Each structure stands twice: as C-alpha cells, then as structure tokens.
Length: 251
Image 1 (cartoon, rainbow, N blue to C red):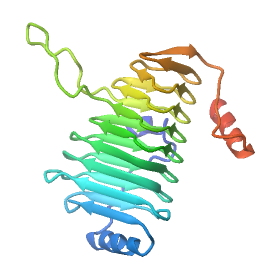
Image 2 (cartoon, rainbow, N blue to C red):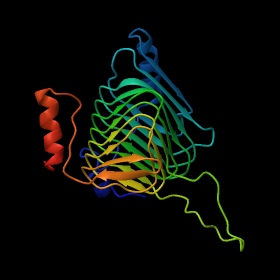
Image 3 (cartoon, helix red, strand yellow):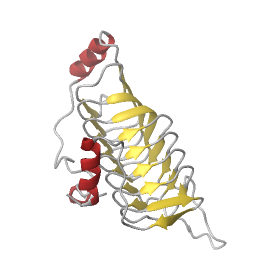
C-alpha cells in the first residue's frame, strides 16, 4: 500500500491519519436535511464501514454503495464538494479520499479489491462520464483537470498465462496522476502509468507508458510530442495564471 509520505507528493493536505467516521444517526440526518437543500445523499451498507462528508454545494448528488461483504472501508469527502458521483466499494479495508473543493460531474468511482487506496486531491475537476476503477493504488493529484469520458483502470481484469501456466501480467501496479495534470476528453489510462505534474494528455489518447512533468503526450498509444518546458492554465484570469506558473515552478 502506498505510504502517506508518497501520497503527499501528489496531495499536499492528505491526512496523516483519519478519525472516526460520522455516526449512523448523523449520516441519516444529513441525508434527510439534504432533501430540503435540493441535495441528494444516499448511503447503503455503511454499518461496518466509515463515511465522512463535509459541506456540499447546492444540487450535489453523492451515492455510496458498500457491497454486502464490504467491511472496514473508509470514504472521506472534503468540504465544498460540487457535483454528482456514484461510489461503489467492494472488499475490505480500502480508502476513498476526496479533497476539498472538488467539482465532479456525473462520474463513477469503484474500489474493487481489499486494501485499495483511491485518493483525489484538492481543487480537482472531473467532467461528466468519467469511469475510474481502482484495484490497488490510484491517485489524482491536487488541481488535476479531467475532461469528459475519462477511463482509468489500473488492473487487467483477467489473468493471462503462458503455455507453461505462468501468469504473465501483473495484477496491481497503480496509476498516479500528478498535480495540475490535464487529461483531455476521452483519454484512457491503463495500469502502471505515472503522469508528472503539469502535463497534458491529448484528446482520445490511450496512455500505456509514463509521462514526465510539464510534457504533452498524444495518440494511440500516446507518445511524447513535447517534453518539458510547457504549462497550462484553466483560463486567462490572473488567479489561474499565477497558480499554473506556481505549479510549473514547483512552488
């Protein structure tokens, strides 16, 4: 399992430890009061698991379903969540962490094995249609931006054997998306990939190999077209430009 010190390279405010989740009564009251605020919160199977959810924005929708055999898992969603996300948790002792000020639109997160860590940093934006499946280790760094219809799957799904019966594909090797990375629409990422901070993956690309920081990769499979020396901003505002330059300069 990934160490907290390693996670902090991607998510500055990732907690050193987690407290107890909300009580069943608190979660129930949060679900009921959400109705009057035009918000939807539905949680199934939380009895043997922990859930903590901060203040959410108007019209947000969070659905969390724990498999009937799921125990000892933890879902933590920070303050000012804005959007619509469906979360499925299977297995035992896994953690889904979503930082503050996340904007996630009509997406699905799945934690499908024991001891999985799926961590999303602060100020991460995800457009509609993302389908992100974690079987071990999956990290989206602070201020990452994922456009529509992103698919991330850090597991082959089925074992592959050679003629002698030896398994030839590794099961869990993780996916690590650095801070302030931009995944353009319809990007697909498979296991074992690390994307350095500030990089851009072009639309409709399939990423099978790691990409260094401040680079651009495009294609199927994706190849580097610019290595280092570039940065991007969400818009031309002084705030966003300053933030982009700060990530580029490693501040």
